[in-house]
Image (cartoon, rainbow, N blue to C red; front, side):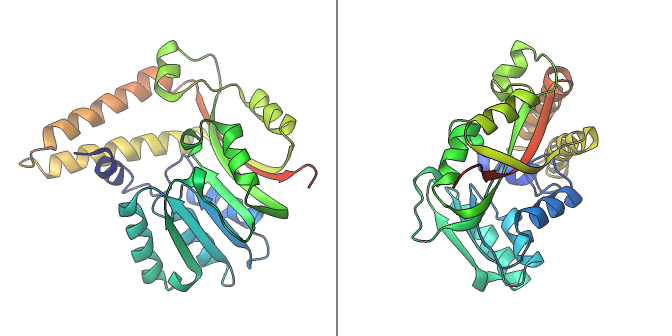
Length: 245
């Protein structure tokens, strides 16, 4: 089973592909797009979950999403049609780093996709190119709550602690105007949902040729979380404005 298929199954019970619950997502979107008529861009939108929620919340809002996965974009189109918001959603099948638009955006999103740009600050550099004066960026990325093991760094990346993460963002010319640190419950719910969904799929499809490998993968990822990074990994979502436009 390819990685994209496995990810779709893993996130079936947790469509927001980051450790955030529905209330946290709603509050961040309300803070990021307070008027309800903003132009919103998601760099690395996947199945468009953030954009679909923003469109449902803001009846005059327009959104665009960029992703390299045609399968994920197809899912986004189908969901938008089901919600009746397809006329306000434009999707681009390409790498987010190379995306260009003739018009700026009031809110630029990139949550849990910093790896596609090479880290948090390069993600903000990409977002900056699309941001209208006075606009906001909603970005989400990991940090270390305590000293990680070498294995945790190898699995997830070389993050810093929360204070240093925010200091680096500020030094890069941004001012946080709101944010959310994922709770232990949000972090745990995300991991249980992902690896539990994979395991259930394998158990429900015992004759599928991928079943054994998927079940083994679910067990491996669950063990890596519990033994490797559960006690050290954190996730922060920041709403940012340019300190000087």
